[in-house]
Image 1 (cartoon, rainbow, N blue to C red):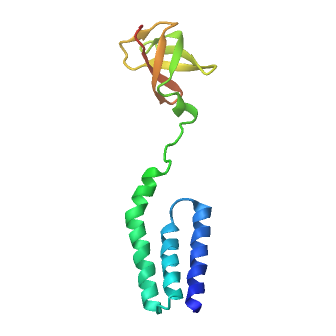
Image 2 (cartoon, rainbow, N blue to C red; image 1 turned 60 degrees about the vertical axis):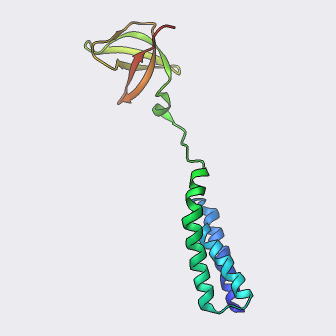
Length: 146
């Protein structure tokens, strides 16, 4: 009967660890410990308890982890300059890659800007879309007038 307390202790330990990490690391073993505790309660010997613990833990890990990972929120929110990519900005100084000049204004900040290709000049007042960030410069393309 003492084995049931060991399994329940492991169950609690696995749940506490999972609660602290929230990364789906030990929840599978908590399920195995629960089934092993039930087996101990029903009078199973140590070997079947261990086999149930390992078997249930592995089955839960293999079959439910991919589903749980898929449904977990794994989207990251872009921050800082990454959040600028895809947004629109207004050109405040003509953009000319060959002359190494150009600025855009976005979120109350003036940024150095360059066009995607050297042969494209973008005049002041144009609306551009930010394609990427290279160092302290925004690489932009002009949005066509609708």
